[in-house]
Image 1 (cartoon, one colour):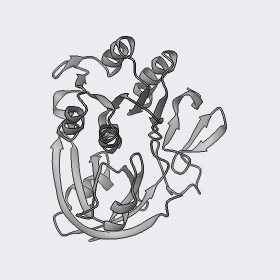
Image 2 (cartoon, one colour):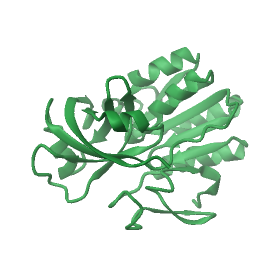
Image 3 (cartoon, rainbow, N blue to C red):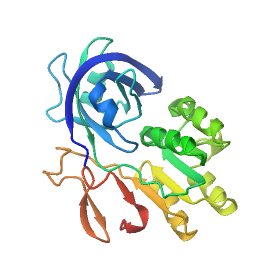
Image 4 (cartoon, rainbow, N blue to C red):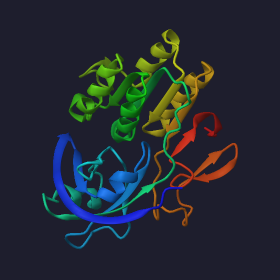
Length: 264
């Protein structure tokens, strides 16, 4: 198990990338050197009194080991994330991580489907990079409610292009890409392609709508579960997931689970 580190560092940038969604980069070289795809960090503002009593969990969106940077994306949903929007270059942000079990790509994977919705999208970026580097073809489906909330597409373009895969967009209102939910795209892709691995992150109903058809097609499928977390270290039992092996803690047993073991 990778040791959890606490590291406080300056903000490198903090920019809005979609309606209510921001991309934050922090200098945290020790965490950058040890983070794996699918893991997350617990975050608090350190340059001023935090409005949050508890830290906020965010998936590791990207790392640059040479530069020592760790990136996250966050959506403004409350006082804590609102405070994050006011953090500027040079302000201190405190991170604990990397936390959790990441993605477990089956050996020999040649064609992967990554499906993500909303702020679940960042959890799959490093996985896309890893799969492309291993020579697998990577297809990515990104879903959002409307075009103004579509985020992170440019960060996936390089992996998709290098792997000769495809990038699809689905919006609930049809303002960008296919009109409908993510499964409006993934159902057809699963029926017409021979995938050997599927990874999903997003709202629970969206994850279920992709994972169950993948399982029916006999494809190995993993999901990164979204749960409200308090401690982030497995002590409070506030983020449990019901599985065929009993109750599991999303923060330390997950956040990535074998979809066939989750009790939906």
